[in-house]
Length: 586
Image (spheres, rainbow, N blue to C red):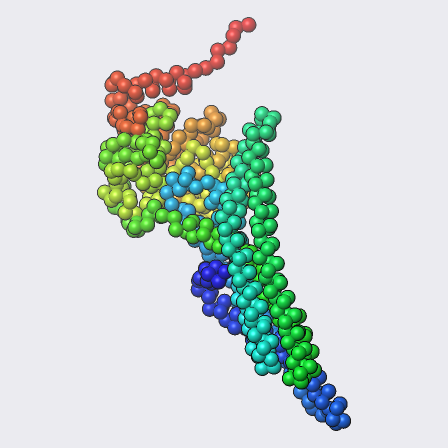
């Protein structure tokens, strides 16, 4: 239990000082809580003595005791307030910083990390696990550390009146702590299983929601909802099992404290009957026996939560310790932008996708990459952007191995336009501005005009301040594509990678997209994956990829003069792009 508390305190990082100071305030706040009872006991004892002696009580003593009681109550509130100010916000502050840090971590891991770890798993770590720590971490510190601090403060006061009663209370708390340790251990043993069940349910929910369009189109729900229902039932069963295991230790914890309370009353009664304790002190101890263990009794739920928090911290540490793809990278400024593949091979796990690639893409030239589906074209572009690291060989940019760059310093030289465009749930202006956060409104509009999207943006209800749906769902494919091109234009990187940017564009938008791409690529080093002849035939060089290797290389005319994959590819494309519907004569 206390090992878990150390982890929470360590998680607080630079805020540990506030945590410790808050616990000191809590200790003295508890002393202030005990003072009114002791003052009342002293006043009662004085009244009884005066009654039997037949003497009167000085009014000054009454006023002094009244001021002591009022002052201690005010001090208790002040110290409690200061503790809350110091401690309550720590969890939110640390969690906010950790979320930003985890976002940076996920930006710097290889894309293979996301195929090895489910989205539901990662999402649960960043949201559920971190929220658990954020909301519960400081509360657990308050309940456990400050709870024991309050108990110690009151026991120190009681030692003066009855060391025996104080000893009984300490023994009761020690027995309670052993039971709480059992609760914490049980919770730690079951937390991993509980979190796995929560991750499974999160993943099943994401899959179900993503597949709703398919579910509706086929008018079925059996297979799609079955995994979600199963995950929900498994989570319910695990929670019930956890609660059943928690109950025995919780009963022992409460029993130890109740027996200690009874023991205090019993020993104080005996001391009062023997004349070793005044009636006033006896009444004080009876009152204390009911409130003495209040702060300790509340620790059962906290001990139960510690295992959950421990598991959450394990998950967060695993995310934080993910290996950066640019761990040893440096910020490098380039003088040239030639790209060279030197004996490059790459595979996803054991499946090799690219084999021994050797070619050069000179600065300020256009290179088209063609080949059948699954031949490794997109993988090749992902390797240039270092979304993955090569398995063998090296890729150099401006003569420098790209593994020597940080991701940020490498990617500031590269703009990418994908076939599947993702827009953030934000304004269109901010989606374009994503390419250059410091861009002015004038620069944003200029980029939109060049990308041929200014006119349709101005027709939207709020113009550039229109908020797109998630992923840009409120816009058409062509509109999203042009906004992504405007975003790339604003970045103004010397290298542009076009990954089938026009493959799924409708004919009405195609000429606009081609105009936008022409504006984007002017004076740049262009790498384009394309199937359309108009995009390919004017390239400075064409790389024909088949089976993960470069089977042909040259210009359009050179490759047409050769037997091979490219000539067959062109024949197929000419048929595909030259087809038309003949109208039957009536």
